[in-house]
Image (cartoon, rainbow, N blue to C red; front, side):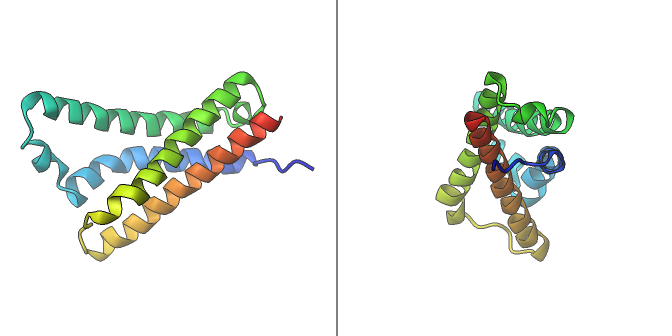
Length: 142
């Protein structure tokens, strides 16, 4: 018996990924004071940093949109489904690994909302890693 991932879970994960893309500017500005830190870089490094920030935001939004619009295609076992779910799984597993390996050494502001937000966002990241790794494995075994 193969355990399938229901479309509603994939769509819910997609909504969560779009949420992360939309909340990303708020977190950078209000939680991490990111823009003031970036201003201390040389102009080219400022632009590179901003570009990478937009890449992250764009990937989160795009992965979410794909999940919402074509959840069935993400689990049909085709080469494209394997490649796409593998990419998304690697992205989120890498995010979680980076979060665990590097971020604990930095302090998040101690306001209650930021502490709760940190737990919530980390839970989302782990959830995305689980959903897409699960999809990837099911696609390989399809």
